[in-house]
Length: 288
Image (cartoon, rainbow, N blue to C red; front, side):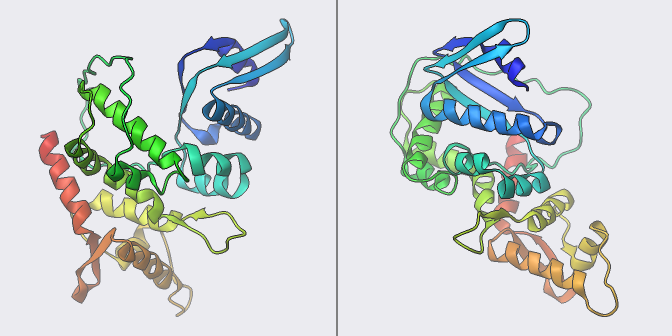
């Protein structure tokens, strides 16, 4: 997206729910990335964005966005994401308050099909169905938002749940169902974030994340460190055992955070933690 396309697509907008989708972050130029984040931040925070642009053929054009909400969906690869966290002030100010971070995992684990699934969305009313923040949801979003924004997110998701299910009151049972459906996605994010110094931005554990992906790809088969060495084409130089130690360190992170557990200690095998295994099995039964 360029500023010209932004001007052409939006122009003057009032009282709308906007959705911006970035299908592949790596395909954008740095200028466009920062533009999206800065303009998006203004709309998400204030609901308004006003700017004059001098266009080549149209002269001065007003971009006026008033009383709008914005949802931004950004698809980004782990390495690019880590670089973004290190290099973008706009992202770091946005992500702490205004984004839900969802590392995507495949819970179905079924065979690939060669036809599009039939999905019928229910009629969703635009009627406001305001809800109070539910403590179960608030705890789930606390690692994604700062301060009271986790409560705002909790109330917004509760309202969306009611609209999807055509109800008017978000109950304790709804909160339990929401937790069971989404805890692996919402809970995975803080597992892979770590910091070393209050003066520095946090970063993303790409190594453990890629290892978890491999365990999910191979589920329900367990994996050894030797299997992981082959997967990531890691070799030891001399007798240092560097690749073994690196993988073991990443495995310890996943074990400590209840994502992986020892399967056959005698043979040095590891597998997905029982909580994730139970989630996958329940998901598969519901899908079937």
